[in-house]
Picture 1 (cartoon, rainbow, N blue to C red):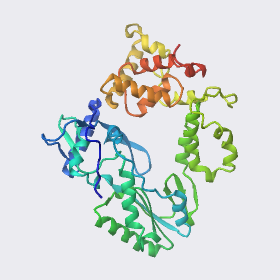
Picture 2: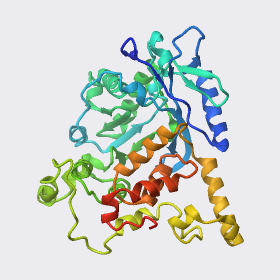
Picture 3: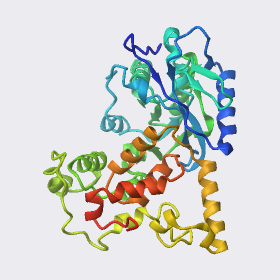
Picture 4: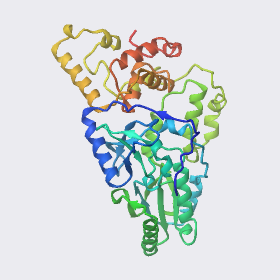
Length: 414
């Protein structure tokens, strides 16, 4: 299962490395050394096309319970993906997977270690995945990194090939790298699990024991909680994400919200009736509507968004505009210390886009998510692991020139 990165002959994509906080550089260095020791990456030869370079970014890492515990480096290949063709191998329907579980009483879920890295990249294409590590050396991937456009479909094709044949099709279901083994009895389940692990071993795929769950009566799978006989309910951890979704204010945002809640439509009575008013507006990409009835506080959503990170008030400051213009020499000593501590935290735990153009792109994308004010833009950027000097000031200037932001009475520091 070799991954080909077919790009036009004159294509090139060089993106400078994002600024990485000093406290996070050891994390990146350790990961790069580990990749090199495992043969996942190799040094870029001096005689290859050097017009390619991708930045590394740090993604939040979850433990077996779903809690964020650390950050892991990964490649940002978006400028490569724009040249690659779509691979539309069909993904299984979630409803069909649950139908397979209707007679099962015991389950095992398997988690693969470095699953995508096991897919080799065609050697003449490897230089297109080049990146620069924190030590200044340039490496390229031999095994496919997470994020490249064709890898999900290619992985599903391999899983389907392995487990759609007899006898696996009667007790294994896969969705990309999610593998569930289901059985009618505990005795047969032990044999089923052994067969699947043996098959994965033969194709050089390894398991992460810490994230595998064996012989369970209840499992979490694809956003749902599955019990005996395939009875499924909503995973309340996912429902929390829906409850935090911003209030849509444009037709495009209505489409995004309906796409999200449609995932749970089987569990919401009268779903079509409830979503009919929104469905009538979803095709109006450029139409902005006014909320005429919203129970509770008129601006409850911006208020909730403002609580995601420390606000100016939390830091002992008077307002957003004060934060931009306040002279430290006139501030009380304890406020100076709080401001300096918060600034140091941001610089140590976030990355900075290398150019002003990329900073502007990040600001605009965060703003397009919804017209919820400068604080919400800053929080969204922080949530994606980025920060730079004058970020809040630039977000404030953007909001002050946005009519929808002003019309929704979101606090902008004016």
